[in-house]
Picture (cartoon, rainbow, N blue to C red):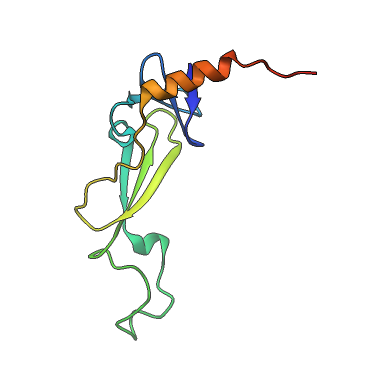
Length: 120
């Protein structure tokens, strides 16, 4: 049984595997971070947040500085769906943002599937 966990991710409770919600490609063990099985692109923040003040005239441009922040984009290795993006200090490891008790999820899914559909 697969449960959709985010717009881009599902967990197969039978195999305990993360899957892409778009193409169903297996991403990795649901016991670990889904980010480990994705392609990562580190972006210079100035590509996304350009200067609002002319940098040739002013030292402060109000654009994030790459010495202070990087943007990590995570993509499905099969269909290239962007799964996540996060802003981190350079060198910081990816954030473990979701961790689930798979046994509890299985129990909830079994309980939910046992309920009557309620179609009157």
